[in-house]
Amino acid sequence: MSNTALQKAIELVTKATEEDTAGRYDAALRFYDQAIEYFLHAIKYESQGDKQKNAIRDKVSQYLNRAEQIKQFLRDGKQQKKPVKDGKDSSDEDEDKKKFQDKLSGAIVMEKPNVKWTDIAGLEGAKEALKEAVILPIKFPQLFTAISSLVKAF
Image (tube, rainbow, N blue to C red; front, top):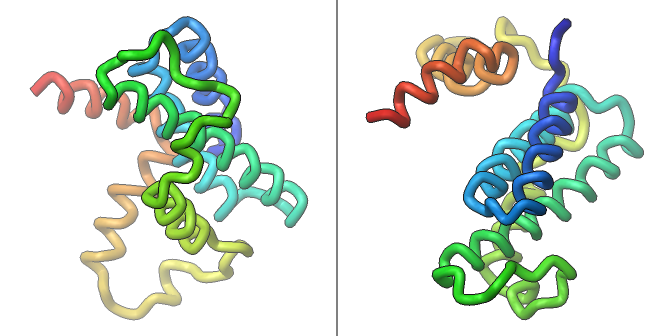
């Protein structure tokens, strides 16, 4: 059974919310970050219509906000009991966060481009590097999880 980026994103965000609820914020943050990457890939390459893209974007925004709250909580040295979940803390107005969200929204492709690798003349090295760094890990995550754990060990 093949896993689409959207399915993988949903699995990761489910793990993130479980870790978040259990108070394991470091793990939750990692899962939120990974899920957001998969959601963005799904928006670019897999979603079928504007309604689905907008629904995914709304969820990504919520997950980004939660990840930012957890990052702030971890950065502050865990002085509070829990990071705020209601979305009403002062960090919502943080200028850096708004800049990040603006950049992120600019990076999202609104429609699926109809461009093939063969349409791009030259730049063979750049195309191969892009395939190795982005495309292959998304299409075949099982091949890269072992590599990722080996890299983290060093």
